[in-house]
Image (tube, rainbow, N blue to C red; front, side):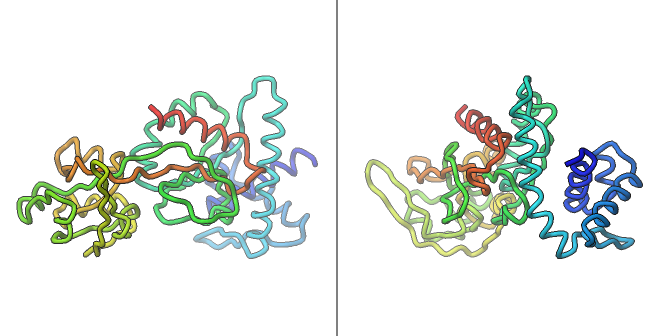
Length: 295
């Protein structure tokens, strides 16, 4: 396949994901007219319209979405083939990573500089979202997941664990009292989040004594940062990871409750939706993050 055709395919995938010819042009170092012309030539060669163009937006057509889903794994395989034969072993291309928003902002992004310095020719696209992503549809190369994984078709690797804690604001505790035993939580307002939305999972252990609590959240928020903001605002008690609430614990807007009672650690997995076809860059990122979480 001529290089120009490969470039046209890469440009199409970027326009489709960015929703903009100008954004793809800036990213590739080309002019907007060059990108538009090459994508139009690609469409003409295929005999099908891949993009719907309006004055406000650019979006893939139904045929464009199908083409995108089939083409991106091929382009990723080309990147890996090129990387494997380069004497420098440098990783290139675009690596798309999905992860929970709060974990990405507070845990992963502050540590990314070492990875990007190690692989300066590799471009990263971070997809921050607390809800479960359709990683195949969104062409995610590697997803970072906290908690137990449902049955999925790809492969997963355990890269670390996170301590789970129970926290509340000083103002809430001043108004409602401080729980001294796990069963005291039944008399308090509970905030459910992505980690603690299912109250039945609030299991604690101390000196071989395990307690499982059946709590019903008064407020459920599907975003960890939102759940922490609710707890800091005095709306109730939340269960989250120690990483997620580290800043609030340090500045005193939240305090840890029942520290002598241990909750089960949450596993952190790197999930590879493409299974055996997973890109080298995705596995390299998982290796890097496993090392970072171990420190």
